[in-house]
Length: 318
Image 1 (cartoon, helix red, strand yellow):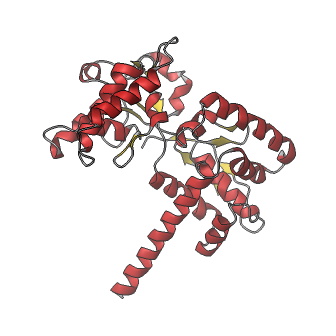
Image 2 (cartoon, one colour; image 1 turned 60 degrees about the vertical axis):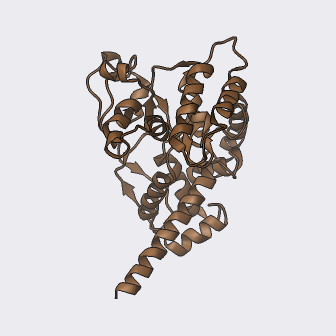
Image 3 (cartoon, one colour; image 1 turned 120 degrees about the horizontal axis):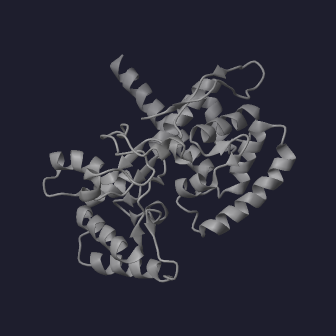
């Protein structure tokens, strides 16, 4: 994974537990849709060149504008066609590239199908087209009617075709994709190590939604900063928050307006306490059943499961 080295940061930690940490902080993931034809040429406009190999390698040379583009902070970049074509034929000679592309874009679940918010951002509907959502959904339902549930490759192919034909033009620019549960768990593990949090303490923090004490709030702040969702000076990145959490089932502008109102209120109240401000924003300004608080609790449970499996292994081995 490509990273950017940031200056040494002094984390706010409780008395007696001091941490001066140099953080090589991943700033997020961007992918773009690409066809076989476009993959052979240059990258999207202003994108800085072609995508890397599997796993998020760096791209080739591109326009000079990429060095000054604010999007440069979002790494790594992936051409979805390049990424999938380079590995797909090894395991699926009859091609399941459409599903692979959707997985790279974090827009597909084999059980429930498309994750609408991240995938829809790869398309630009016409300004006067107000039926694209309904038309696309009807196309997906009609096209999938006679396809078995476990034939995920055909289902994904229908979905991609319906979006391309009905939703809008493909956006030739990289788009944010959500982090996976495992990525969030990895970030949480790093923050636990930074702040010296024990497994028992983590259980208590989860039980009280990371509002138990100062250290619990600092742990939440660390997690959302390292996900690229939050900055002490600028507050939450609402674009990232919306994509990461799948849209919160509300229109994007409505979500952002509501969040800003809540953030402004809490900023006035907790301006001098960075950990309390970050943790309260997460708890109060974003839905608990789908926002970063929920994602962090899921990550904590993944880590707990991992620890239990490790303990069982060692008990059995020794």
